[in-house]
Amino acid sequence: MKYAERIIKHPEFTALQKKIRRLEKERIYCHHELEHSLDVARMAWIYFLEDCHRRGQIFPEKILEEKKDDIYTGALLHDIGRAGQYESGVHHSVVGQEIARRILSDIGFPKERELKILKMISEHHKDGADLEQECFWADIYIKKADHDSRNCFLCEASDSCKWQVEERNKTIHC
Image (cartoon, rainbow, N blue to C red; front, side, top):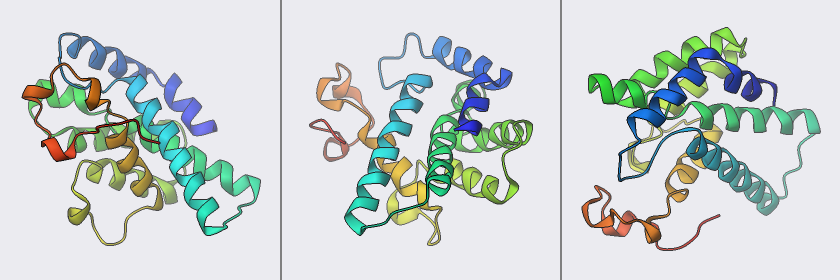
């Protein structure tokens, strides 16, 4: 996963991860730092593999590695705009797109895949009905993993959570 590896070593990414951790230190609700992004990446990858298995799809190793890198790249960057949202009030999907664009450019991420990652970042928080018709194949897995990674059933702040009761995870997913 050469691009995901480059992201986690990128100075802006690491600085923002530290900032998000600091800004969310006293937050009683779900956090959005690296641990969450890696949970999302791993779960999205599992969902993708399960889906391939159900469909009987087999990919050459090179293609499979590219798909894995795309999932991890998208998951690592999906909440990168959180610090900006806390500081400016602008939604993290908007702030995150600009940050991700810089990071992806710096690490030499392929332009033909960059737009799909940026679109995923801008839409990962939307309701399934609000997503544009033609979404990036990884969007589905990342969006599902982003939701399913939350342990609502153990949350001490559930009484004041903004998620509707029916949206909350009542058991382990994946």
